[in-house]
Length: 544
Image (cartoon, rainbow, N blue to C red):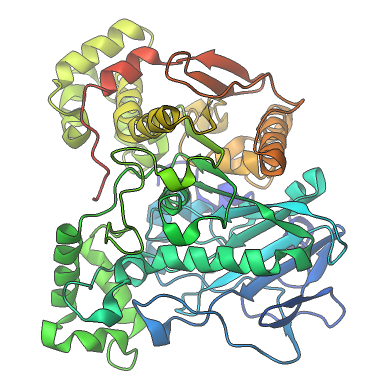
């Protein structure tokens, strides 16, 4: 993309930040061998050895499931037990995906490991903790990465858990799982019983990881009764989907979704049509469907090549693993009592859309209605000219480009979160809402507060990602507030703490919203005019 928001800048790479100093430990990349002097922990499958970094115990690449090549499109199983001590000092491989497409994924590419390794043996997780087997019961923060349901991994340095552990004495867990067609190709109606779970195996991987946490986290000083799942973008959507999955009930006790919502799953008819298109691309007939499960007949690389069809892959409302839509027609009853934080950034689409089309930043007024027409699916029956007129009345200082990004953010990115929060409020579930308002100073401030920017703030890693955050004192003030708040939420199920003003629960009368900034404030119904206008359009979950 034609800006400074490249992978290198977002990772904060360069001579001033060495990999050893920032990330520590004897090895960071997949495939390297650790020392024989690091801390050892016992898991249900065998012993693992990690390393110490700034007095934090770090374990990377712990298997929580067996390799998936032998169980393609089937529910995951636990890893085979091993003898001796397994070295876990390097990230495991990421789920299969087009590696050379990563720079085109804008924000997600910028947050990933520099040299990714694809493998169907991708069910690994990473743990950061201050103590092992010490009898302490620390809250556990399990992060689920974004990239829609199709790309990325948890192997990026921005997800490093050391600063959270040192700040709040929590246990941090990140993980990889099956994505795209490997995780969400719905073959149940084309094949036999072996494919019954195929549309949701990526979600079932997450459930297996949470089961691993339940069974093993006490060994790492964690409390299995205080597990918080949190995720950004697609990771937030995965969290929302888990809230409606019976097999996940009881495995997590707080939820945070950041710019990620999932109202509906894919209907089986659409998911079957997508699967048929994939089979046609692979040259497989229904009679030869079994071949897709055999790596000797259909290689991982060949399956990855089918992703260039551009099809959507995500959870399927299959009546089985996902027996209902995540948040439609209401919030799921099975997670009603689970405390939840939902939020979005003020300028989501400045990166989501603007990174791929820099001309939008210098858009003129005559072209604006036509450019908005490309997002007609989100605008309902509203006329673009009328929408533009409303925004010009509300924000006379906005340029045409500003209006484009504000409209697409409100209708495309924010609308789904508003609906989820309203459905939680109707359910009386404990819910808090935020809006991220801190504007990045990078590139003269053109990005505003865009999609993904809140990630380094909740991880307290703003210096690692200073190419995105700008770094410095102001960014750190925001990180102090956000990271302390997520730690408090993980500990108690209530986000309130001394670092922030009183944050009331959300209801549809007041609509109290925490607006994150250098000096964060609670506002009632911020951008209310935009919210009310977007509410007149019927929201359709993209891809479903």
